Length: 251
Image (tube, rainbow, N blue to C red; front, side, top):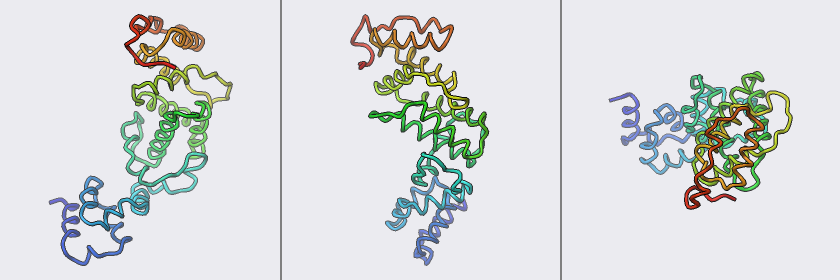
């Protein structure tokens, strides 16, 4: 029997520890592996309520990521939100960053979610340039250099774009990003060429048959303006023009 199982068994038993006040129970629970929290929350209504409240998640966050609670780590317009969101977020663990689990990784995961949520807003979406600038400012405020902020922001953009669902909303989003006018901004506030390339690459591969005739040539002209040369595969005509029943509907 593992040590954590012994702790749970001891707590489950009919003994005074099960009657401890909430703040002491929290100190015990955050020392139990997260994989066993579901079992804990199912044992008593009082304990289930603890796992729904901010206090336990905040304590778990500060125990595992001591620097995450520093006010200077969360400046700017990105909201702090719930500690549960940061602690239970698994997005950073699947991102291609060469960093160990640390406060930086928590911030990366938070910004990943922030960007993904903003891009998925269907009404009045924030321009990509503003989103990118917000991310850059966030990393610089956390003590990162301009180069490191640019690198991290670019990796987050690429990860978000690669993890968007393949549906009509994503097609319209990528088309908007592709056609969005470039505004001259100093480094590092301009999106990287890799990010812009990935947008066009997904449009001309994963969403090729979602285009109508006019939209296709508008996006293709924009791609030729940004990149020279462009892959020959991007120039092939979408099948949807010959077979309207295939692909997504377009606005």
